[in-house]
Image 1: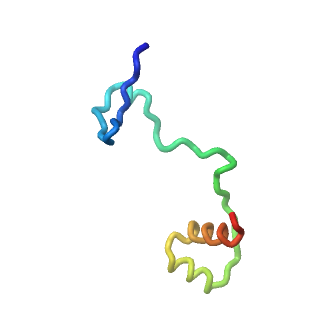
Image 2 (image 1 turned 180 degrees about the vertical axis):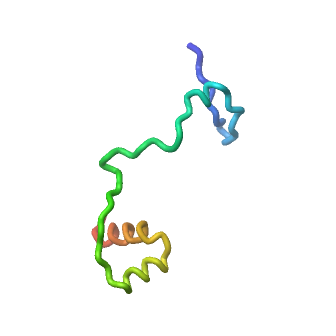
Image 3 (image 1 turned 90 degrees about the vertical axis):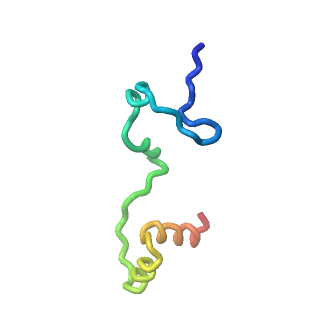
Length: 73
């Protein structure tokens, strides 16, 4: 059986990309399973909460993190 040579070696070096690599390549990352995908919701928040989240940066991710911690998830 002809073993396929990996594109990245044990030291993290990437070998030259060949024709089969580009032939089989797909754009982007594979989609997450439905159960793991985040869903869009609308929330009414006080201006102070919104400003505090904006100050922390990445407002959506930060709100998710805070809620998960508060709910013990």
